[in-house]
Length: 61
Image (tube, rainbow, N blue to C red; front, side):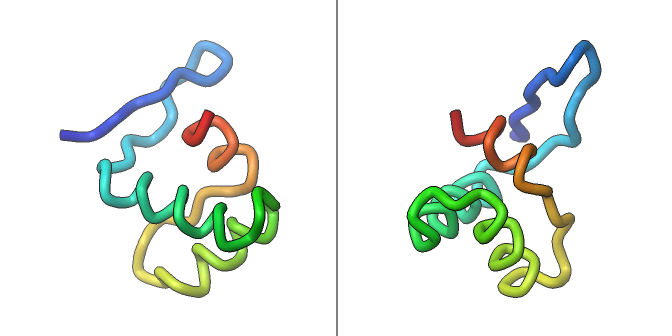
């Protein structure tokens, strides 16, 4: 099951729960620095889609 969030009237790409959890963990490692979390997520998970800092913010609020 994937989770979808609506952004400005459009649907954000579906992220499975395990990827959202990984985003939350990376965000915690970066002390809520969303840009740093986006960079670390891309480095740590090169074979996944790479959300930008705004996507991580929306998914984790």
